Length: 204
Image 1 (cartoon, helix red, strand yellow):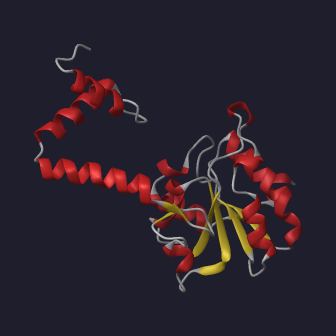
Image 2 (cartoon, rainbow, N blue to C red):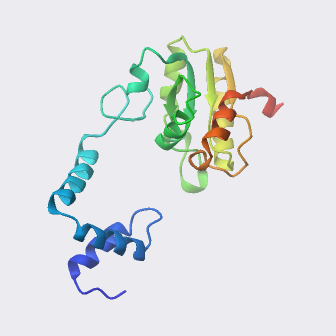
């Protein structure tokens, strides 16, 4: 693609580095920004700078947060005895949108994937174990994507926490194998949470 401006080319190149954004889409976004008032563009860039500089991760569940403890963990209305383990923040948002879950979360920050060089030590697994050691937890829901990496991570977690004497369940497989939670419709995801099954059934 030929550019009439080096600045335009550089901006398109940066937008093109975003996931799922090709060069044509990047060009369309950049040209759109050029047409906007200066105040709107400054507000956009300021939001990105503040996001990068000020965003935090909850000290309890590792979800993205504005504060040291996220709103979900700090809420007195949430059931602290029920922990839903997810891959990342997108899954927290997907489950919250169902309106059917009232426990708390634990964000692993990824899935075990030896081919990608991601092992258990790269994930927030030790902090999950510490939460269970502190007591008060009755059930852990392993709500990970129905992929090979997701199943590998679930099996590892089960072996790690099965001796704590708590219920360990997985979301019902209304979600097709190979499916990622963020793309599942809210009704299906909500029903999967509501009809979760003990993990032991899956390895019997």
